[in-house]
Amino acid sequence: MTQKLHVGTPIHHFQLPEFTQFISSSLANLSKKEISLGDDIIVTTQIAKLKQQLPELEKLIKLEKSAANSLTASQADKTRDNALTAFFQTVKAGTKHPNAGKQAAAKSLLELIKTYNGIQKENYEKETALVTSLLAKLASDPYQEHVETLDLADYVKGIKSSQDIFYDVFLNKTDMTISEVRQKGKALRQNMQADYALLYSHLQNLVTFDPKSDYKAMLEAFNKIRIEYTNIMERKQKKSSKKAEKTEELAVAGE
Image (cartoon, rainbow, N blue to C red):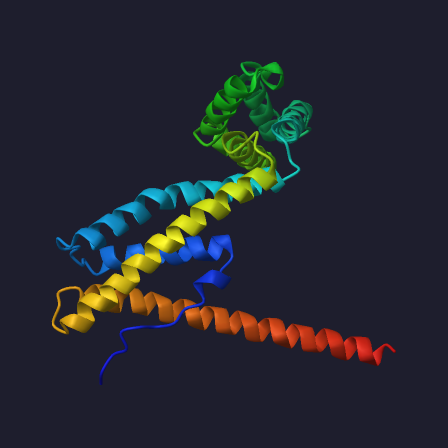
């Protein structure tokens, strides 16, 4: 069976995350199949450009989520502080538990958390480091056993979850507006789309002129990803059409 040299894919219809994943999958497939880039200057140059630009595009997607997220570092820190306070207060209350074993576990934990007094008032960086330290100790003996004895696992999970959320918000915070991020992402996407188009058309030409070209494997690898994403887009379109039809049916029924 003769394989098609060109596989149409509606790349220009991809949303930014889809386009980013498409490029990432295309490059990853080359590595997975251990396909040599050869010495063709256009091939090596265009792939190098795509690899160089991909991390920046992935970063912009995170920045867009950060800019669109109303959760600020201050709000995330407050959530973390609340989780710490809830844990500390519960441990303190446990020191008065009627069960001797649980009371002893609570007292041991209380001695530990005394070393973290005032943690909520520290600056972001120091509090984050202290919370990381506290979580590490709570995951080690004998404190891990004490947490289990007092059934405090959910409180500890709450601290860890709020720490992760804060760290993500703080790490990815941006002073750029969502409009600025999207504009930058659009420009970079256009550059990468042009780079990819040049690479793909050049591969087609190489294999057309020489069907036994070493670049046939690379073209086939790209076409595999193009087929996968074409199918994905078709399924999304069908799903969207069915949803629209259902909405229309409900609207008619309600008249």
